[in-house]
Image 1: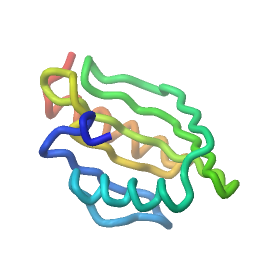
Image 2: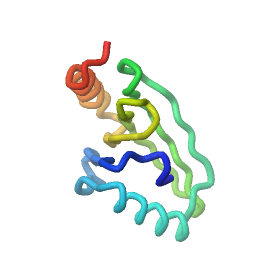
Image 3: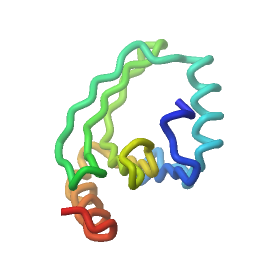
Length: 114
């Protein structure tokens, strides 16, 4: 996992109920190690909903965990300039598609993607 994240990686959780503070690469990896060892993933389904240039993608993600819990949320993923590492992920509630699309458009304008 660490090899896929840029050094300046940040995860922003904009979900209404879960909503955690922004997390750095180190914090996300620490959480993944703890969570993966404790519960683990049984399966993850992902569907691309929209893209912005070469560096942005909005997806719907539906993980199922080892304890049987299922969840669904939107992820907005930004790659670095070389399109080789994940620079940012923003999480949204699945019913907050409008906010996720607005953020996709904002980031697309910010990074100057066509």
